[in-house]
Image (cartoon, rainbow, N blue to C red; front, side, top):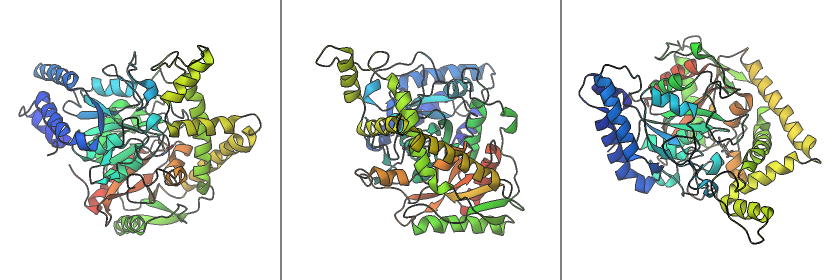
Length: 480
Ligand code: GLN
């Protein structure tokens, strides 16, 4: 059983054949059936979402136009909502109730979206499998011996299993695109600043982006359209709403210049991943696109730069969890402030988060700042320049999303480096602040979906979503 597509629900709603309440009932039935095994949602707000649905039904009956009415949405557990506790899948925020709502969530709610619950993720969005969540791992709906990916694995699995139409994810180094690829859904990381970060619990503030995960590019576009744009509460938010249309643009493939990397720099890239990438490139070429090989001399250093800069920012951002202001407090033995800090942070943070705080503190420490943090900042600029140079020659770049089709539960458990290396293709867009879209294009022999990534210049989301839909049509993976 799966929820009918958003397009179908929306049409039935507009024709008066269904109601928001009925759509919510369907979604909750699927959640009841599937969530106990998949563990995509860590909190389901049945009462709240029924209440919202009833009030939307009344407003629709009064003739109000609500563009997203009927859209059932999951929210990653790092975005503040006024309806339920937000924990970042961490013990340290157990029971924390935000006093405000994230701008992205509030805007979608105002447009009529129905927030059904919060989705699982790696603790503070640090990880690639959801195995670092205090609520346990989210399983891949295509094969439950595989992870859903991460960190937005709950959002991806919820959409893939038909428990909701779409979900919000966040992407600091690939956390929307990688789980989207593992679960066979569409995931868009927008240009840095296009969607307000207000109400998003910070991991690495100069990388973090909120974006849609959906069954198809059209739904992703609508979600982005209604949540993006300037927000006075986020000083880094952009005002480029005019660059985006609510319905798909027609971007002809004929003459489109598509860049391919001159060498694959990922570690252990699977043949099936390159097979689907080549197939996508062939499809585009046979429809008139021009393929060009592009040298990007610095992106091979993306992983090193990302894991220095992101951990540095994380170590600073996470210093606020000290047992005084938010969530859990553990008193400690010595009844001193310091023992309370140590006991609280020792209990509240999981292993991966502690590792990152230590790494980040180390690279920012006086003796090592220039050698690591300063150098990584310079590499970040060089990577940005590589992309700026590329945009002089091509309109978009086509790359893998991940080196492998999925990861088995426990596969990276004892090997954080292997997990970090699997982010090689996604972190570069975050380092450069540019948009990137992951779309499913087929299945590997193990039955797990394989995606490709399309990266574009700043604010090219609209084109990426149109090209993404064409790529999916050519691969026969698009749904309504
Ligand atoms: N997997 C990456 C990491 O662990 C990306 C995380 C993210 O985008 N939130 O840092």
